Length: 223
Image (cartoon, rainbow, N blue to C red; front, side, top):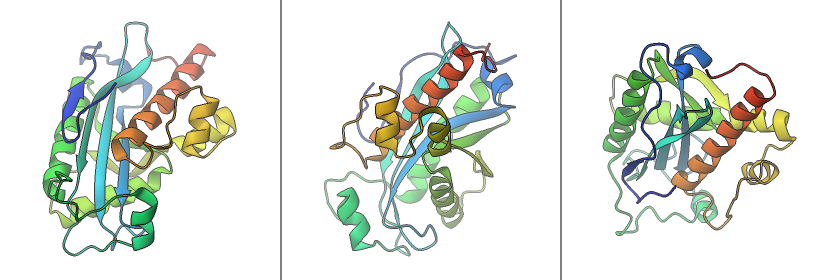
């Protein structure tokens, strides 16, 4: 599945009705949403948020978890935040590129949160929970950006998260995203890595694969 930068794309209609949603039952009322952020450094309180992507999930007719909708945006650096040159060199992001087609931080977050709330409601969940690779990093940046943007309603749990680095260590003996994807036979193109949209989709495929594999082995079902 692909998506143009800055937009959304639904790959399937939700296959479960609100009442008795398999996702609601499976994750104790939480709606897992895969998040990836690209940033200007490691400190959520001082370094800029530069990209954000969210992947919502649904359940197919066979009860398997799969990607539903992707939302991704490039983000204008908040004027109070800074960028570490070493981080920009690593990600290849030029925050001052006039062709980035970036949104202000608050607008980018609101767009993501709107899609997340829609998914939470359609699956009869109580709130969303962030799924990410080294998840507390992404959670910290989302929480910090939400606070400084003055957004009162953050759909994500403030401290709980699901970490695919830990899950991959258990399932495949790997903690690096590219290596975990390779072990899971998920294609991974290093030339596209460190883009929030690409990394979020790879992480979503990895998470769905682990959940579905656990179900196939007799673990807690989604239906």
